[in-house]
Length: 311
Image (spheres, rainbow, N blue to C red):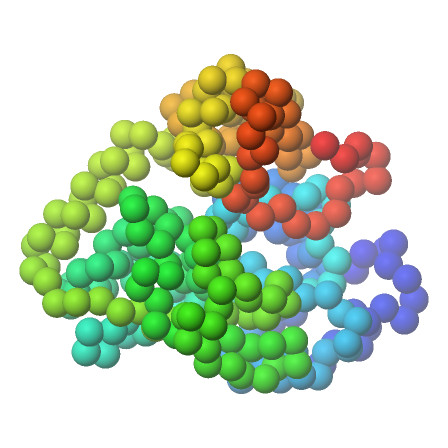
């Protein structure tokens, strides 16, 4: 357990759960960037009831952070205080119900797209182009290839910080470009999407086209967090980054992809500080050249190390 934490920490008063609690849990191995410090506690709930019980019984002053598969995420080198919740298999079911798809929050977006395809349901192909899980996609209204979650979401089931269950219609979630009004301390546990009947072969062809497009235009088989900055209104982030001369730029072990310059890469031995500092340098150069303030799409969480200077 983190030796620096104070006595009578809320971590000493965790409720009994059926899932697994791990202390000083490394997070770098479970993030796509492969960087970042540990969590004070990592909690893998047995099921939704176990998670609701934990939230209801935990100390009020205990910070809780939800982690999916670690895509679109940068954990800072000092790690995360409090409890990190990682949803597992119990939250990964995907089921077809007529023309709708009901997905647990831990289901991969690509898995949801594949099941819809096998069921002959169209409209969800774009999910195959979004890395990560359904819960994270709902939380940030993720999108790709001209579509976004708000186009297909019917409703979502969430747990509030006291463990109370809410089922909310999509229109109540405040979904806009790469944003929702879901409070940061609420947990998405399930989502239901609308689809329409289609031909499985045609749907498969659309998904293959998406796969080829990603393969041709985005870095593959490298440590990256996906798209780094949101596109500004009426523009493309990568074009601004390229104009600012940032393609291929490096800082420590971090690099701006020379294949798609809206992707940052851990090119080997990078720290979270390297990656975040490189991203901030990109933002500074784009701002100086174009006047545009790029907004981080990657979620940055946790504390820097004491010796690190804020980017």
